[in-house]
Length: 416
Image 1: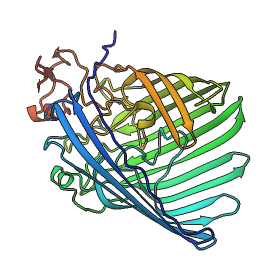
Image 2 (image 1 turned 120 degrees about the vertical axis):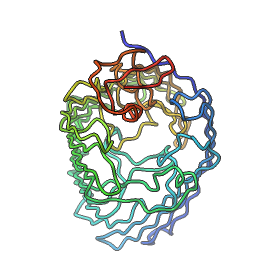
Image 3 (image 1 turned 60 degrees about the horizontal axis):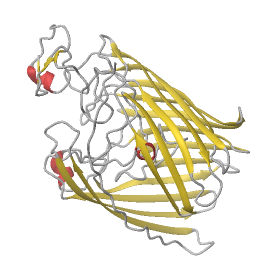
């Protein structure tokens, strides 16, 4: 029987209304700006020490975007300034919360006829339901890429997105740099390459089918330690959009394969065979009438890593978003699509075109009890002996999680 993880925490958030300004109709030059201030607090921390039991953070995200439409080519630039204050010196706050004054987009979009476009430069991107590739909404910082994105529009809802990109490594990534909101340009190079294809096919089995394939190749660099992932992800999503008085559904599944190392530690040079999986299933019904309430039942599941010799089976979440499905992240946010089985019930309402809300119940447990649970950093291991004593590495290696053949005391300490 799998052990159910019990997590206790409180997350509070407050938003500042968005303000925008743009050029007059027909003006080729447009400018927009927004700013969001948020207060978060957590008590009863689920992350292991040294993260504090109680933490509070004030974060501010400012976005400024400008574009110039020159006819067949449109030039765009966007700055995100994400900062945070007041968090504990041992806070879990990292580059997901802080990335001061960064150009997340600087690109040229070339019109190719119809609605097809080719984007070259720095860009952000949403694909499908954003479970593999996403521009962040709730999170204080966003995923961004440098490369090419070809968006082909075949009309009647048929689309094909092709991309080749160098994902940005958000900087600074050291504790002092994050605490001081230091301005340091993000880094991208050929040490990490991400590419793939995402299709949209309407009128398939009574709904819309979105097949996709992605590849990720990385290697250690002078300023980057990686798990040397060389993985492919194949998947598909089928959905029927929610409509008043009707049933809707969404099913998505993906498998991953290739090679990777269990950790990014310099001493870890063992390439493992990767096979991992992810699945989402959802059934909903929208009621007719005011606020068009929708009731939905769903389940998310993703494989964890059992630590078997020569194999790695934890699903990699790539460049996805999770808030829309798993609730607030930041100081909170225990859930993600790895080593988790999680059913949920949800009620959504839409009071107006500009307002929507939802309330949800969710429970979760580890898919594999020998791996860390979702995004908590908590290892779901039995107290006592974890594996046959055959490891000759140091206690330091064990403390970083790179040693599998170790023991765990009742206090949670590890030793080889």
